[in-house]
Image 1 (cartoon, one colour):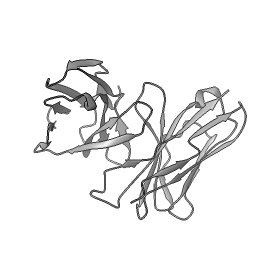
Image 2 (cartoon, rainbow over the protein chains, first blue to last red):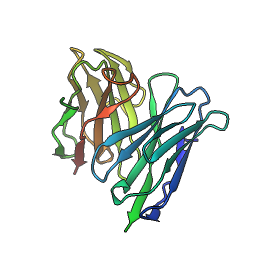
Image 3 (spheres, helix red, strand yellow):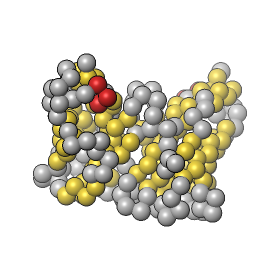
Image 4 (cartoon, each protein chain N blue to C red):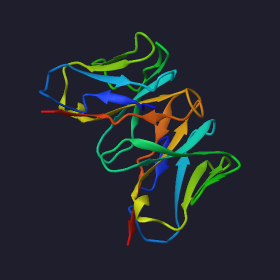
Length: 109
Length: 115
């Protein structure tokens, strides 16, 4: 079983839509959680860390559910510039970071 | 300030050649990671340094892969006798000098093609 699993999509949504991605992780002792964004042929860039209490940054909201071992990312009022691959990342008990395969999002005009 | 830089950006190697990939982390960052990213996949962990100490190399796929960070800043990932399956993007990331110990900042990667 993979450490981190994501639905690869693709998700094709119209501008202005709300879209949500989920990610599950297998190690209940995992310590830190993140969402990264990766544009085509570019490096991953940190979008946001995910805290137990949930956190929001503008149109983006991240939630962590430790009991069910999943992480979510909600994007409201989608923009064309949100089109990218979104990577779920989990830090295990050591310093190994596990990446999901990514969820592809295309926002359509 | 300067981010993570990697060189070369692109490398074409013939099967059996040795290659060396360089990473310059963000100044002052203690932790440095190497990842391998195949097409359509997420980055896969290769190895981790804290300063000059290589604390985890469990992700290195074979003994042909070797990484070092002798002075705790610049790191080199070396692949000996390259094989076609080594073709991938090699990403370097650093952390520990900014907003959070965990948050990693990636370089642009080296795209390795083995022919």
